[in-house]
Length: 151
Image (tube, rainbow, N blue to C red; front, side, top):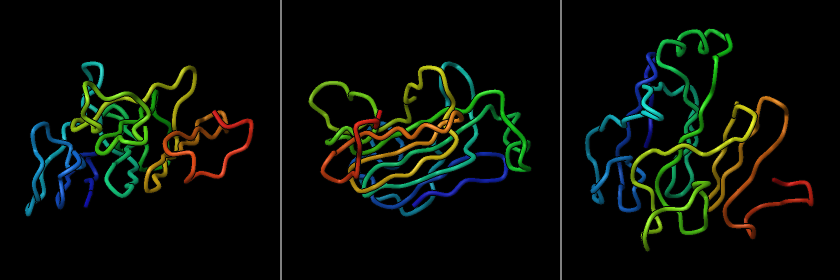
């Protein structure tokens, strides 16, 4: 289960068998909330939106100093999409190292020239809307309704 604070701090608890708690080496049940480190490219980030799949998590994050601005309806300089957890169907949006089909730590999903503004997770797929109105989908194709224009 996830939650985040007004300052953008992110916490998770519950079943962590597939990395969905966001802690390296943690594969048990977290009975108490555990703070998840949302750091990317050397910058501290704060959560502004979260979605959960069956065993993966996706989070839209901004620079910590912009969290309150975004919560009041303002625009961040840049938005980032981080994902972690189960990746057996590619639902994280990146390859996980070795033979392990999970990404236990939050990692960035690459967007070429746009910023993610909304994210939604299904059981084994994910989708994001970017600031240019494009929808991006990845993961198990049998769980998605896609057309030829899907990226």
